[in-house]
Length: 207
Image 1 (tube, rainbow, N blue to C red):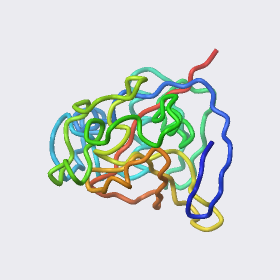
Image 2: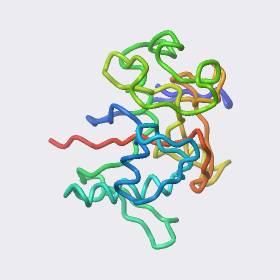
Image 3: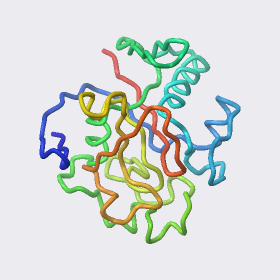
Image 4: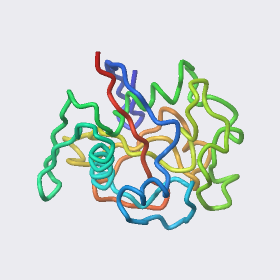
């Protein structure tokens, strides 16, 4: 079940088996695959930030190629038209339903633990990102689902109102406690880049 508090709407999404990375993509991994270092807040094992939704698409396809997997996305040369190859075993972004399902890890609460123990946020981050995996994970072994950096998801936010704007989830190092909730939804255009927004990898599980 997903909910948008802005428009007081609740809806249901069906989820199929999938894999989700234990950590957000790190700066070291991003550089290894792309030879680019976009992050403002440097640290090899810190989450990459200052990456757009389109950057994340390109990374997923590059990583798939380098690891011998089928690319999940087919993109036009200008990056505006993207088609999902749903039978692919390649890397992709999670849907926001997958992201929230994984973040909650069977917990109905909006956080999977005490915030200071599970997340880097405004009150404890010292105004910067931190090495991934240094806070407590949720019960499914996923780290930094809340805090550190927001994470791009695949979904359009509200196409009728916001056009091509995409969803991101999770809260970041500069957010107050109320920003770090499993249910929070934010959005921006696919070329938006900022120093508290990164992404996490997913893959579909095929029978």
